[in-house]
Amino acid sequence: MGLQEIAFGGIYLSPLLAYALLGFVATLVIRTLLHWVLGNHTLWYAAWFDLSLFVILTAGITYVFTILLESP
Image 1 (cartoon, one colour):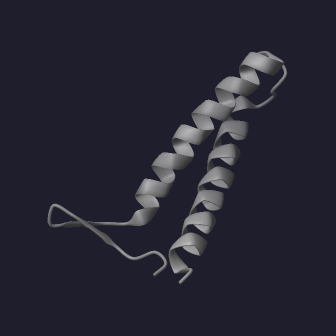
Image 2: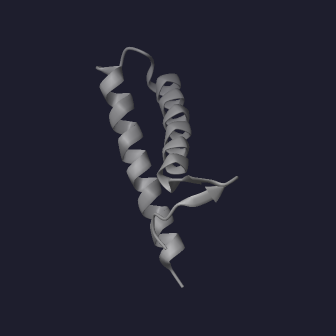
């Protein structure tokens, strides 16, 4: 199955949009937990950290969902 479009109200949407939204929510949760545990001054270059965390989580979510959807 993989990355096929999802028909939503007659509009075709990429599943990557849903994966990116899940990655964004996961990034917010992990970032909040890290700032709560480590403090605000521990993470240097916070914008780069947030961006890389978002990319890593989105790629991981995409990988997991493509494996789950392709299994028989």
